[in-house]
Image (cartoon, rainbow, N blue to C red; front, side, top):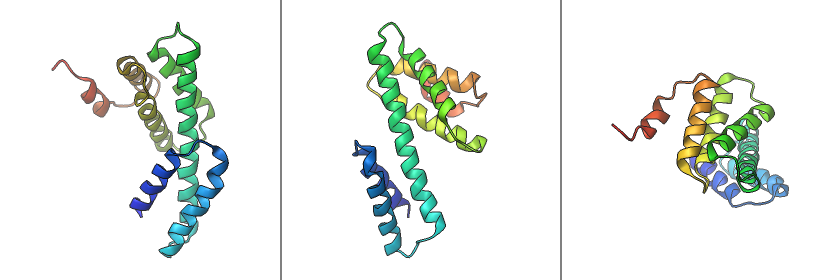
Amino acid sequence: MNRKIIYLKNYMKDMENKYFVYVIFMKCMLIFKRNRAYTLYTYLKCYIIIQNYILFSEVSQYFSNIMEKESDISASIAAITTLLKLLEHDKSETVQELDFNLQSAVEVITNSSFRVTGVSSGCALFMRFITFAKLDNITANLNLWT
């Protein structure tokens, strides 16, 4: 089942238009129906995949707009602004879900074509001081001097 979800995620990355979300949902349902896993859980899983695609494409677009339109703002400030905007619009019901959404958004932002150092430091500061999260896995990647 995980292979099918990865396939759907890759398929949705190629999409540019949100109007095809219904088509993606039906394609998802057909894949799961072939394997007789046609349950409420399947519907919810497909819905979450589609919602995450929409959310993170908007995160990427918002960050790119800030970087292009406002030349006097650094990449780290733009990353923090984007994550704050995500917090305003996020509909997570649990802390774990919120943490997952924030970390996924950080991944989306750091994979952009802008300066990685500034983006990484802004995201790390946000995650460290706003969410009070332990960043053992992120700081290990940024620890270049040891």
